Length: 77
Image 1: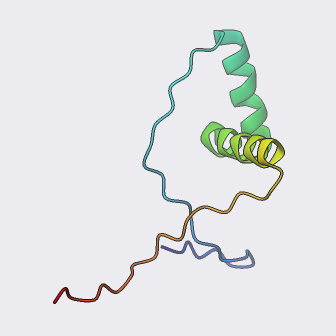
Image 2 (image 1 turned 30 degrees about the vertical axis):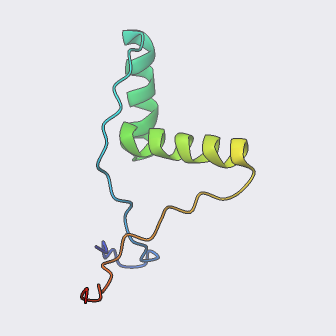
């Protein structure tokens, strides 16, 4: 699935199938949401970016999710 935005590089969106629930101080949450809005990003986008950076720092290599494009299966004999 590609999201087409004029003037922006066209990259496939990551498959989002899991939910992460965290508990956070309400004041910290409010400030985080305000800062996200200031950069025109959703809190989810920022958290995904932070997680991706953390993974890359800890593993020492770029995050490269598995290819989820449809594959052609060969029939079993």
